[in-house]
Length: 332
Image 1 (cartoon, rainbow, N blue to C red):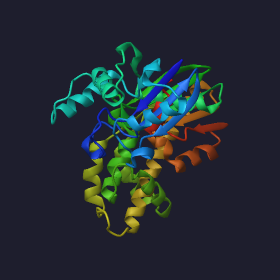
Image 2 (spheres, rainbow, N blue to C red):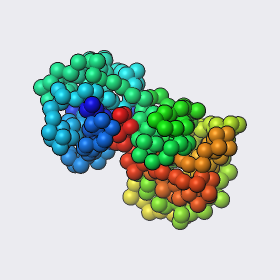
Image 3 (tube, rainbow, N blue to C red):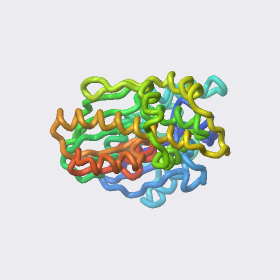
Image 4 (cartoon, rainbow, N blue to C red):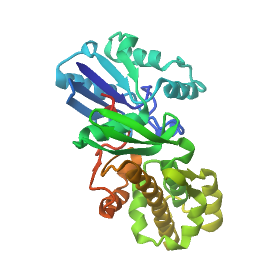
């Protein structure tokens, strides 16, 4: 059986992530799998030279088909990395400025027909939950028989992450985290006041070791709450007003001050506290000694290193393609 997994946008025109500020359709990619074995995989940005491209991954699809020596019409199943409901919401936002059909499956069929001249029956198309795709991409590649699986990012499918247990070929979800409590958005909203934006998170992670979290620890404590049962709450609406009142907002190109370094350190500490809070609870509740990580937040290698050295888990696997491109792998 030939399966093609896709991530990225449902439009050929948009390249700037700023076109879709609330949808997080980016990191286009295609992965072709034959009978459970990866035949070809590539990110769209490698072929169109646009970082984090949110364009429909037509170049990636062509590459995968050429490697396998097959035509699109020979593919048994084509899967997209978000549910139809979520995709339709994205399309409705797009239609406010330009006419597009308000149906994700129809739009996907039209794009495939336009790009490849192939009429794909709707029965061969599927739409998969975004964070489940993240989680599967990590657990399936880990080599673990069973483990906890944490997939966290900015947002997708109206959530910002899930916590699951992987066992054999099954994934059982234990918890989900709403988009309003997004750890990815907590990080992004804060770094806007340090002169950075979307996809710059790694720069602030790198700045954090040069700062001291203590001066702003109390301030950041206003932005989140640790709740029972490994749950938490994020107050995204408090971040901007509090930072404007308490720090010198940095604009892009301005020099860094120690204050900016300290804010970076406080942000990193807050992220780590929340992730450890989640994982300590579910480690104890499930008895799982192994952990898989995926989603954009899993690219925070400082956090990952602290998890490893904490000995909370005996073994940790981080999906190398933890960003949305990796979802194309988790659709199979």
